[in-house]
Image (cartoon, rainbow, N blue to C red; front, top):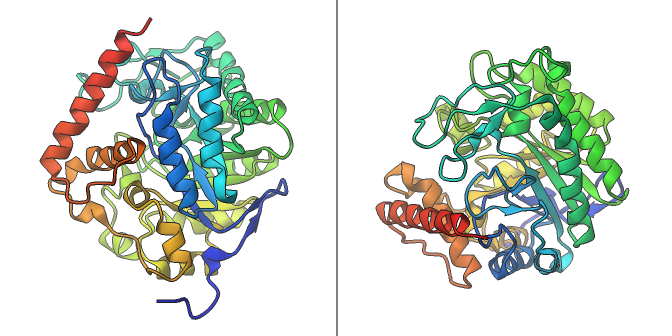
Length: 406
């Protein structure tokens, strides 16, 4: 098949700092778990990101790169925290920026969403545990004022290293219940110092991080923020508060905001709990993106649920977003952007609908990324129960290697 008229997703996009995305498709950030025992990039990143760059997306955002080696989202995270590995990062960046691709490093701190296998006492804005089994996540301690004040420096250092090693931008992760997102919600942030209170105070850390990252990098280096449209929790970070933060981020001169939603307790980013009408419409957060569009002064990337070219085109045509974020389909079909752009397909495979049991989805998709990193083809016929076993085995062996590092 061939497109009958020019596609919106094929149009270039000029960002506020003058950088041009060659098209409107963004590979959304996906945790890879491919780092070595010192949490450094490896040849597996080079292979995986080389495939994504060749696949045709205008923008590729990496998975979690942590700013503190003590606190990881999972054992195989890359970290930038005095652990060397600069040449490996340069190789990673060369592979990911091939084919005119913008490659942005997602920089993050998981806060209380640090697994117990990684750390027995994670940190958080306040000592509020996750409403999840403590066997997986230990009770956090509240960060000291000095630790909080040090976070902008940590994020700025990671951004500076990303810039120096050839990445073309960073994405500050302030969504999905990680540390900066924890500071935004009153459910996790009960501080009585300058970092807690009303939304202006709760957002102050994120804005300081953005300013520090901007000061540490060059004008042509892109700065993005991933932000929840809402946490979808009673009394949590609301859509009204999101709109205020979006306004402030525009004033702080970010180049793009990626809109998502949910967290580990309420995983809306995976479609969990979405209304049937929302799932049929595909884009989980489209209504929220429309409201964000009313106040945003910078481009918006919308991620979550897009599967058909028609839905992607409609969202761009109405101006609800400027970039379509594709996540899970890209775990398998790294060339999906090229096939959409060249009229070879009009949809992404909804692999999540085939996975039984549904809880195997996280492991199933992570194992596909590992296959790409190993230079193998993805296993589209992978059984759900086998995916659970394989994923858990990989996480345990990676955690064991982490514990044995020197």
